[in-house]
Length: 335
Image 1: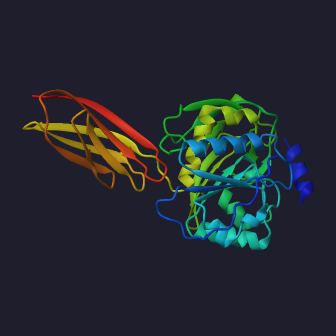
Image 2: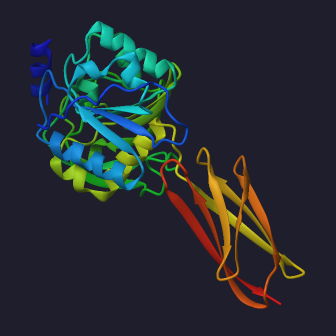
């Protein structure tokens, strides 16, 4: 197999101990846990330490517990039960034996999440199940260069609010096959913006995608070859929200707020993008705090009689697991 990885390459670290064993039972209020796996049995990227550091920083800032390892023995049923998602962060080659593969298959089928970054697609060529999981295998790449990414789905959390075109420098993969229609593509490459080499994929060149797979959630991005990728705020956000998606975490987002005054009582309605579960609070500055009623993306609250004059109200949604929150404020005139 090693020759295959060398051939594919010419077509175009940091070792942390295995976390201590723990019971698979976890409190519903426990912080989400992410396992980052960086074992390589082929080419090894110099950016792996920077990538691990970036995921750790993003986790610490967003309420995620991140454990990193290159030890394949992490792939047991009991240990994987601790985690909400597993990140194959620039893995290469055959990194799991058959027993470990079966444990990982069980993790996904029980609803676990998978994130593949860059050469996760250059991993486990002989494991057909894994090929279906990641969506497509790496074939080759041209030299590192600047290219234009077309963001074709700006509703997915990992690309929400991104520019429609995203120009950046990376190592751009050509895949052995187009992953459509097995996956939901969120970004493609504009091959006219760079030199894709003799194995160009053409007008439809997926570069990031998500899909449901045998009970689990999968997210993959082919970016991340360069050290500089992991200090790029937009790429970091792309990876963070890909991890959050795979872990089943939707960050809270207030979409719309309405207010109505009746007898100096304030009636507030809102629509929101759900975190599961969400906690909601309504504040009228210096006057009151009350809990919002929330259900299926719709919420509301009613206050008692408010003092006359201009008041500032703030609606806040909080993900209790991670502490991530979103707030919207409004000014109202109470007569």
